[in-house]
Image 1 (cartoon, helix red, strand yellow):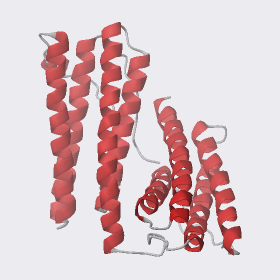
Image 2 (image 1 turned 180 degrees about the vertical axis):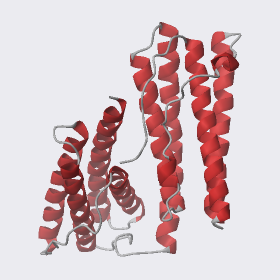
Image 3 (image 1 turned 45 degrees about the vertical axis):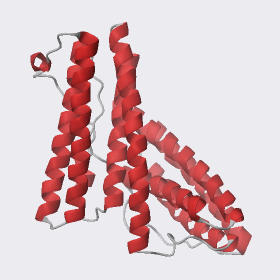
Image 4 (image 1 turned 45 degrees about the horizontal axis):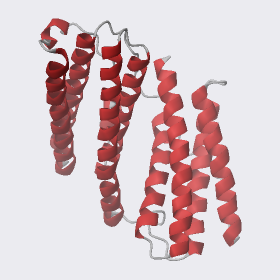
Length: 298
């Protein structure tokens, strides 16, 4: 489990909300700058440049929050809230991984934006006044828009990663039979991982239920795909214990893989099958992310 903590504070005024929003953006920028420095020490130039790019985005967001606060609140001064307890919405732990690639780095950035979206949604639901509620909802929409833009960058990085290091799972299937083979492998591997993740979590929790539901759907889809081509599904055990970040990452990668196939395939039957699988993958991902964010907020 990641050490990420999403604990919505009790917001007492719109001024305090905007100060907290500014602090969250500034903290994210600082974390990205630190990761960029770490990547330079490891001579990972492309990752260093990417984290600098992400830091610049967060710094721009922080400046926009200042402008919005001044416009909405008039004489707003963030320095009076310098002692605010800023909640943890940034997953720096994953950013330190030795297995980090530009695609995985952007996936982390997307998750960070989605966590911020969930955070502001909770704040809006518990806002003390109409102005705070409206501003929190606007901030949540901003984070959702940021995540959308970063997903586009993540998709570009995914394609670049596939081009540099092609594998059997990342190729664009030329025929429907090849797609079913890829689908069987993808869904079966994910099903075993998500089943193990559900069993490792406390019973009767939303997160465990979400991963269990994903595992059951993935197993069904894997069996259907395998049956289309007479393929036998393997039964090897997991090489390492599952983690929540790993479980979410599998859902992200499945969606990116199917969406990429749907966009680039020249075979109409493959396109339609990939579009259906992409829709199922994003549905599972949405449910799992939502349940995990709720669990962190409790």
